[in-house]
Length: 342
Ligand code: PMP
Image (tube, rainbow, N blue to C red; front, side, top):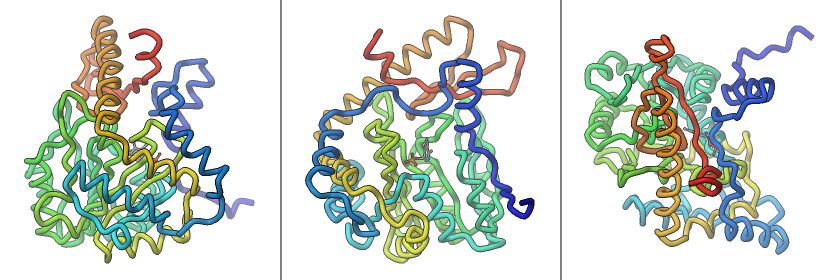
């Protein structure tokens, strides 16, 4: 059957997990906590399964969850969304990203992405016939510069895919960089696909600012979130897409042929979780920061320079002490260390 062929690469998560299995190694390459996740949210999902939420829900997501997403973002980020026309639920951020990229990219369109780049962006952009334009961010600060943007934006630029907080570099972008990016998006009439799945996982009082909240960006951003990251329930694959109605409508057109809908019991539980007190989110950040500090300290003691991690489950070390100059690697930390040993 040599007519069937995929040019798509194997995801880095599959490759690294296989290597970890083959070598009987601890897998710090994939970002998931080895903790069961918040019990009340898991119980809400179990109750919903037993009490009737088992048939196809609305393609756009159950109304309770769309309302909870809108309320949550208004509370945390001051972004006001209409739950019925500006919010859609997807099967994880991965599906949300594919829907958004396939929706806005036509063959020949240029799409700007920032390196280090999250694994799924380039294959989907290419699958849509788009041409990726890469901006290389440099450690240790990974800042966005006007000079770098001038080199890639042009009249063929259709969109940018922007991950903030940035996995794997663990940087949370300051307002100044967001304003710079916003200025370019407006000048070249580009859509911003904003992968903000790590929005709640920020440390040391650093606050995430959604690009959508920057003046002039409200109607040109497709903001993507993930309940898996917010609640450390990575296997749930419940994602959110928030955008002005014309952008949400095109993303929804793709979503109907990808996953169409998402497990309704999980949607009920995520709606419950998003309404939890601020304390829940703030103490989750503190616990993860302790895990980060513990791993960073251990790495420093054995001679690896650790780059500051402002958010995400990851930190990055410089491999120069091993004679590999210019190479940095991402390492995940997890709540298990907090529970057992800190
Ligand atoms: N974007 C980024 C930057 C991520 O780190 C991840 C998960 N590792 C995703 C998207 C995918 O999220 P989900 O599991 O909700 O599909």
